[in-house]
Image 1 (cartoon, rainbow, N blue to C red):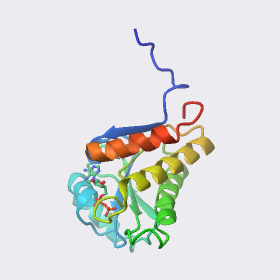
Image 2: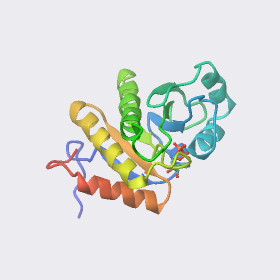
Image 3: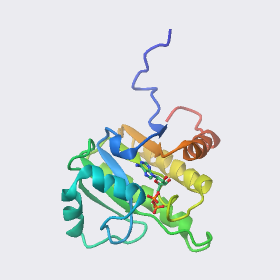
Length: 184
Ligand code: ADP
């Protein structure tokens, strides 16, 4: 028999395969562009699922620089909030892409903490149309999430939502590679 998982030992950093628009968490993160006015990929899926009110609120924000994030309501999504993070376009790796991607995770998590949120789900920011190599992006994501959880013991859960088996394999590998001594 599997013993019930106590809240003290339940992992707080979780990799799942799925659709981020279906995640029942306090906030989902959108891989947005600098205009915040919608695009394809996960951004398009989030706007479709949230309804037109999301775009209307995004229009009031005046865009967002790369490496930063902005928060809106989630409207028709199960998640109450959407954090719109702007990842870097991959340009070969020598244009600060790693640091800009890390900042997306840090800024999104800081916004969640400021609002008192406890659960958040991220897509693999920049790894679609923006071309960031998946394994490299996964390592950065896992590193930043672990650092945040370490510094914020009261935060509930960070869910890394992978769209398909390739992304899932990359994120699970990154999780194993950097496994801490004790459960995070
Ligand atoms: P970017 O422009 O930042 O690369 P994309 O939306 O093109 O953003 O892709 C980012 C990641 O989101 C990719 O790994 C893509 O497979 C994934 N993705 C696309 N749709 C969804 C979805 N509905 N749920 C979760 N992840 C998604």
